[in-house]
Image (cartoon, rainbow, N blue to C red; front, side):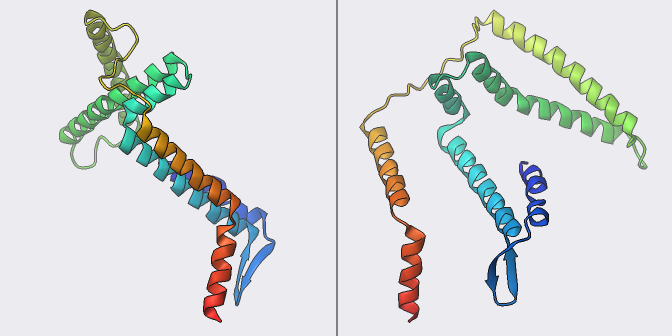
Length: 190
């Protein structure tokens, strides 16, 4: 979902920065194209890291960590509500779209006013559903705090994991790995 936005930002770099930085035979790469590919690579790495974080920790764990790191409670509760009820909203929208498809035929019902009416009805239905969910939560004693069943303790495993990755990052920062690999490849090629 983020790709079109990042692509829109990055696509202007080759137009603005035309200075040739890399010449490999007939192929000439400008600084704009290098920054374009760099931005796309960073997008892939960032989205991949976010997906790995959510897949390994879970959204509830991420929100609990945000709260422990000092994020405002209202923000964390809103994120949890958004995550829990985005599927309900998508299901309701899918039901409405299926009902529109079943009630129309021969290409009718595809006008803009039909879609605007569907969006308005979806908004009204979600407001009514939110009211019912809110009343149900109040009747069950919800006080604005989501309780998690799992406790988050920092033990020796977490300390070892953090120390190992920190040592790797420090080594990678201190040692110029691309330079070492380049010289090693040049030695092998000779």
